[in-house]
Image 1 (tube, rainbow, N blue to C red):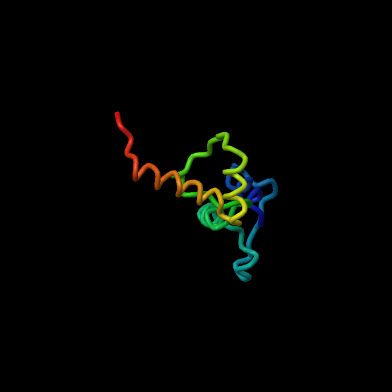
Image 2 (image 1 turned 90 degrees about the vertical axis):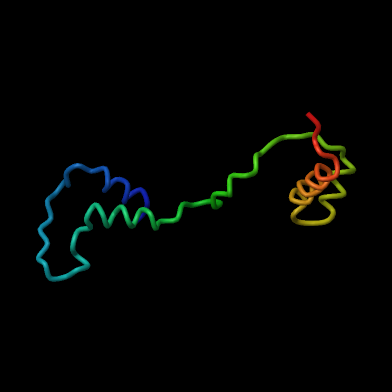
Length: 96
């Protein structure tokens, strides 16, 4: 059952066609709203997982040679730029 199906089922006030469960086969039993809500919580969303939220996306202009030097070191170049800026701030505290 897709996420969209679960959401639609949760929002539905009445079923289009009433279903009578015979009480025998558990797989045929309609899901309760609580079970649908639990299933929705377990469904993973598509795409990249949510980050920690402590970083902010910005656009800055860097000299070409600086950017090439960090990129030449391979993956994680943005993290290394972040660490270089953090090291600079540790050595040069901001003054009010």
